[in-house]
Amino acid sequence: MATDWDRPGEESPLRFDDLAAWDAAYERGEGSPGSAVIGLAFHCTLGEASPRIIRAMRLSDPNQRGFAFTAAGTAARLHGRLTPELYEALRAEGPGGFAEHAIRDTLTFVPFRELPPWFKRRKIVTGVRNKLERWWLRSTEPISDAVSALRRRRSRGDRAR
Image 1 (cartoon, rainbow, N blue to C red):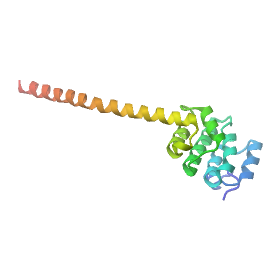
Image 2 (image 1 turned 45 degrees about the vertical axis):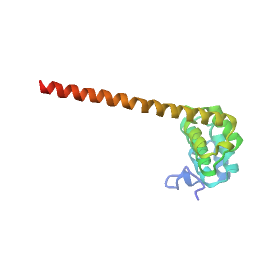
Image 3 (image 1 turned 135 degrees about the vertical axis):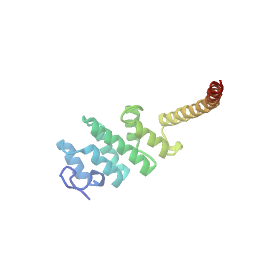
Image 4 (image 1 turned 180 degrees about the horizontal axis):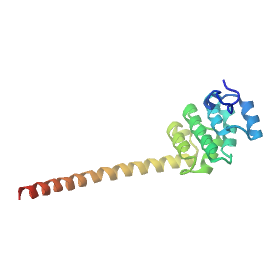
């Protein structure tokens, strides 16, 4: 696997699995630690990757921060759970920002009984909102069909004259 993700021609950061090299590069402020942390999420245990994902979530570069949240969503997909620190970091960022997709991944791939209370409430609210939206869209279909039928009837009547 790759040990340095910042050299041209090297392997993808998604194949990165060297925890010590990531820590050293992060401390030096070099490379792309946000994108490399996705590789850690793929190739390391949740316990090993979690502190590094959280550190990458605090990066000043918004693109690299976004990759860190992607890594959190990847961890939820792969492990079916997150660490308490990752749950708290996602909650602190909140929906609608960088954490939006990571929160959705967490709600999708982590069993409901294992979610912390904030995520359980979020899952219930999201489920109810989606259900109401489906009902609303279904209720407008007959109205739309009736309007279309009236327009067709009116256009046929205009041609007959």
